[in-house]
Length: 157
Image 1 (tube, rainbow, N blue to C red):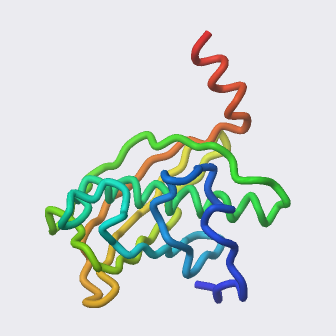
Image 2: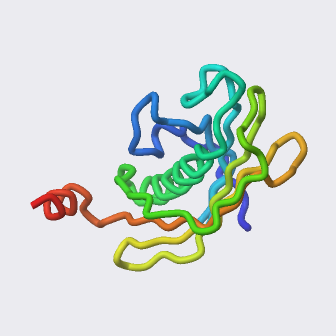
Image 3: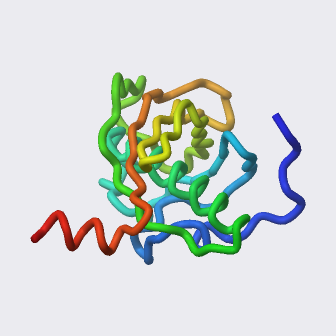
């Protein structure tokens, strides 16, 4: 694995999302095949039930890590982050019912496959940053069309 770039852009510059849907706090490491992001669960975290964020949100944390990785790759080519689509998660398993308040999470995404047609597959995990325990794992499938606007127009026509 290569060294992290000296300065990583804010997460908002890597995601084609707007607040409040940016769920990750930032990126800790990114290279040609992987990304590591971080998020601290707080009472103001989106989807917080009072005691924490339901484990089901972990899939979105993983999807946003993948989107941030793709946004970083686009940025390296002088392009803005492009819209992509979460197709699904295989074998999502989580050892906790929720991510508790004050929990610090590392979200990792590692590229397994990227096809020319925009289909991709990533091995993802969510790790408790304090205990280093893996809390969640899944293989996540995504689709990033070359022209999302044209793709959406064609699919609704």
